[in-house]
Image 1 (tube, rainbow, N blue to C red):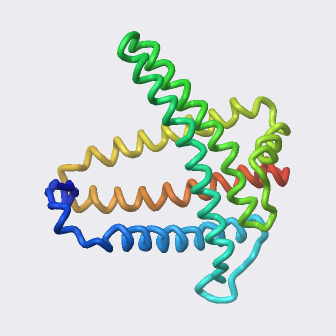
Image 2: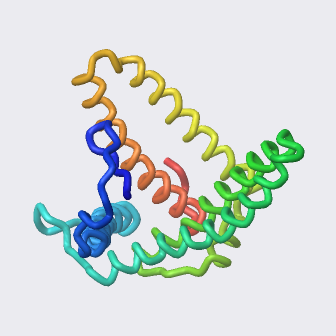
Length: 213
């Protein structure tokens, strides 16, 4: 039996009723969506960092650039799963004995992973502008900033706080479903644009040594 969430309700579907090609189609749709998203993201990186303008309404589609971007993002995810899974098992065992220590360890690991992800994620815009860099290269590029770990942590803190405050404000309107739905969707789109803009700006400042204006 398999459980699926459909319009706010969980329904149970026997496995024999699930088409054998369902997961294949799911993977194909997910891959296509990721590539299309990467197309837009790489276009934005190139527009800001290279001032590359499109000749028409639809930007140039570079399949190698989009696929390479997705693969690098996927590899970053694999790296952090490799860190999170064994750490999670250790903290679960510690929590059974001393839960405050496990909680403190969880917070420490989340902060560490967040900072590392931000620092390593600069490989994405670097690849988008045809200046591919390795993880060690982008990590070392942060050395031009005084106390890079604290800077990355500050960016993450303000971003998370902003997201929590706005999400809380939007959730206060749950009793008005149409407005709540529109605002939630608009905020998700805004966050996506904000994420790309922050990554592009940080890359320009850290790697290309541009001044913030």
